[in-house]
Picture 1 (cartoon, rainbow, N blue to C red):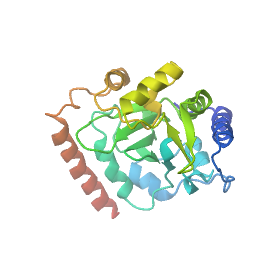
Picture 2 (spheres, one colour):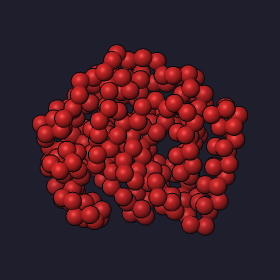
Picture 3 (tube, rainbow, N blue to C red):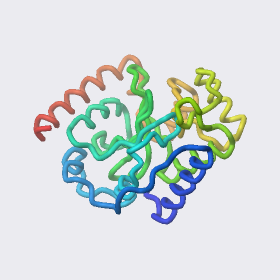
Picture 4 (tube, rainbow, N blue to C red):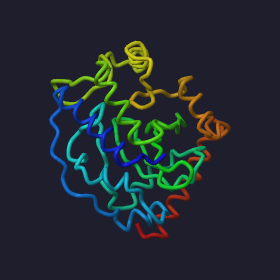
Length: 243
């Protein structure tokens, strides 16, 4: 969903306050909001881009690793490469092309849905192949930022002094341990809102089904073929757009 702008600004400010209180160095916002580049409309086949997204892109978050797990906010795309990641959009309940890769983590990326009934939702995809795990990370940007704030406040997300990044969990290297740690610290924390690898996890599969993902597509038998078809379609779109 699309957040009320006051709600979004407050959620973003709350996350920033929690992150800086944890010791993260955070630059000042860069510039007032501006319209999305025309290329965004062409790449993602949309006639408008929500104010919530243009506002976030004006905040200068792409200058530093400000997200949990040392994640990055991606700037507006400058070419067609942003479409390539969308080949992982298998079984999603909206046109695969109408989402913009927004947050990038070590082995995950989150997208912002640009149109339709799912506009404003944040979806997550694992980059390694054969996981087929398109799933909502949060119903909106404000909801996502609120989860991250809560993670910091409960101690589930903390600053790593060696890297200067916010890290999720105690650093055991085992993602299932991290999931359990989050749920033990605060049952209200949603592991899917954080950059934790969760292939085939029951929580992920249940969320997919509830969100309308075509679960018949996300199987080892069907997903590779569907992904190949998406890659061909993306190549055709890029060729037609000259990007």
